[in-house]
Length: 224
Length: 224
DNA sequence: ATCAACTTACAATCAAGTAAGTAACTTCGC
DNA sequence: GCGAAGTTACTTACTTGATTGTAAGTTGAT
Image (cartoon, rainbow over all chains, first blue to last red):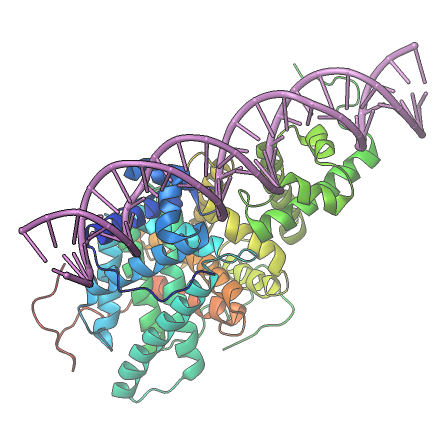
């Protein structure tokens, strides 16, 4: 463990170099995964040796952590400018994000690959993604609370399920889209699903699955 | 031209051994990913050397392919017994699958990790997952067509989006659930989301996002 | 005796990380 | 403002260890 007290990262060239490395790492980890990508490949892309990368980041694990933090910071800075929208605008923001993402396959792939990989044993990105989803879920849940309050609706379980589900569809659609972009309309499907889920929270309908035993009789049913 | 050379795969012990290896491989690839898991680890779990595994499967890539095929076959055999349900029962079947999955974290993790990893360059599982999603999407779409036909609804785009979305939520929920099982109610959320999407197809409502002028009018300098 | 199912032994890479050196740039005493 | 001293940003070279795959030999069953 290296002593962390250093003078603040001063040189602007150095910071630029670090950013180059982080960008290259996003690309490599995105296209090969964390376990599959190598420091050599990242180094090649920025024109240095793999030891040079370790000079800047100390280890491959640390590099991944900083990649994730960096991307998160720049995304938040770019898209949300200081404050996150809330209530209905938050949902519109998510839909807009899906449209933007349709033109950013590289970053989408990095998140898709790394988030799923992070559930593996001792993955260095795990803590990041756990926290990320926790934060996102509560932001979406808060938006739901706002719009529900406006309409006098109270349904904590529904809000919790709807919040996770919205994030889940967006992620799941990305994977299918990456596998076959011609078969999946990422943005349109995201919009459809988000609207469906928001509608289900705001104007709950009787479960379409609950009624009439069709040809297949089933033992017991669980209703909401 | 059926090359039925003498006992292609006959010995029962050998088949059992191959199954053991496949089971061990699911566990290792599920917990470490394909790139991160090693033949050595799989070999240890079945009590042989890594060369023994290569004797049976030829290469690591081939092992993965057979793992995926094998799991798919046994899943289909177990759960669907000869014929896939259709129409509304298909959606009920998907919800039931989510409930079952809540008790099969190992297999859920294997699919979640490997499907996302398969979008990486030259991944040996890519063809499998492309085909799998294509098949699943068209099965779900067909179920939608059946229930829509019963009700005189026609909406091809909506059906396409809804079909991908249903598979997407299920997958996305699994990732979040694997990351934090205490924060996500996998089965309940899956049921909620599937019902929401089915409802949206059967009784489309005006988009809750479309109208403007909520309390939070956002500044017009929005970046698109 | 033959063949399948292994094992041991080895080949060939390849990866992450370390150590030590070097050139350029900063800092600072004066 | 200038040279020494230190620091930074690397490189080269190496260590350590792992990993897939191959080849050849061994054993037990048919």
